[in-house]
Picture 1 (spheres, rainbow, N blue to C red):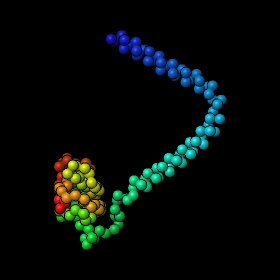
Picture 2: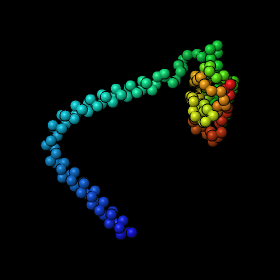
Picture 3: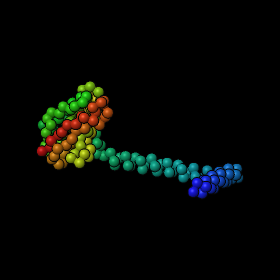
Picture 4: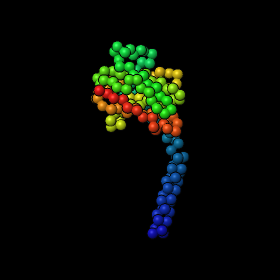
Length: 174
Ligand SMILES: [Cu+2]
């Protein structure tokens, strides 16, 4: 068995060496053909580049509209939003109120009270439905409409110290 593997290894090494030899031996000859090849393929490369840029812009436009981040300069007044104030601490959340209604927009005003945290809302199947950063000195706004009533979990999305994993609370959607 060992000698068979040894023989196969030797054959493979010889094959790879032969490929290297072939490429090196033919690289000199091919240099004469370069001008005609480069003239043709540089044109193709330019068009391909433009195509990729255009494709990237189209994909970006359609995957980001509607833009998922709400306007941070806007106020989200309590008369047409359910406003929930969220504070992130090492290692717990404060959330007032902790119950909202389904079908109406909820504006979460999220801040970090000590270090950076990540405010993540998960549904009952632990699928992420919305998230924003919780940063000291800033109030980040997250607007979400809950389609389904239920118990949603709030988890921290940014490692913030020893008990990061224990930063769990619950949001009730009626
Ligand atoms: Cu945290």
